Length: 395
Image (cartoon, rainbow, N blue to C red):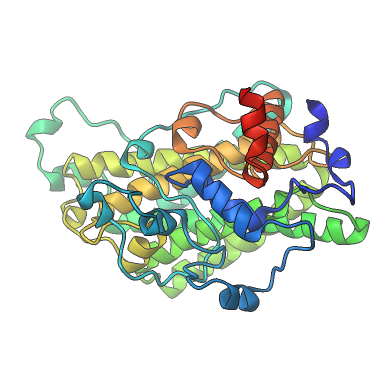
């Protein structure tokens, strides 16, 4: 089975089913009917010739193009007869989709928005990555004057103003500043890593094994978080200057670190995303406890409704739940990539991605689990290409 995970075993020119064909079937991550949508995409787009990556020709080829990666799984499901029996659920998708400029990204069900986990460090590089993340968080907390305090025993008798003056809860402006700064930094690693792997692929004149696209999606997803919260607040010139300095330092440090220790860098990002999950979890707790009345009934920004396919009456709390699930996805992906060999192993998420029921219960794929997942993806690809394969196996 390990051969499936090795890049060298998947580069045969005559292989009729290239494993790394992300553009053809990337949307299969979150399809409501995974196998039906998987077969639909393969039948429409998969062939043995070179895949046409031109977005202009794609727009001409597809009668309905709701995104740069083709029809979104949620939109496709709604277009299928009998795909949704509950008429109320059918109204949760905005009638007009404007985000055709974004890469594919997950859309979550309510049950998938809850689980968060933490990975205990095992090796020296794990401990190094975790301590670096803690150092970064300490520096950010020091610069912003933030210190998390548990609520006192008599918090029930304290007013909101007293809790804020005591530093037990943050104002909505303080939360926005933390979130905006976090997202300007969180979007750096995916782009830097993707660029380095892109240049490596060009230099070596060989395939990347599906890593680049996943890393770019992570980077863009973080940028869309920033764009979403920018709809609530426009940062000052001082804040932008602080971001400029932090981004310049962090991007260069990550650039050189990834050249030397890519696995440690992915572990670092995994722990960084755990901190992001923690931040959004505390924000959700304060909102649900009534400590952020300014956001209690605030409607979700239009960009968020479009991006996450939220219902028309979605609130800001729904957006933050979706953002936290995104951060859990980044945590899962980077912890999984940190367990692989970045030079030879195939990205297990190149074809599809586990849903949040898996990512909410697992910290990431170990290498053996990644092998099994690639094998399963390969099997699904063959079944979608030739349904007779599945029937013959059942016999």
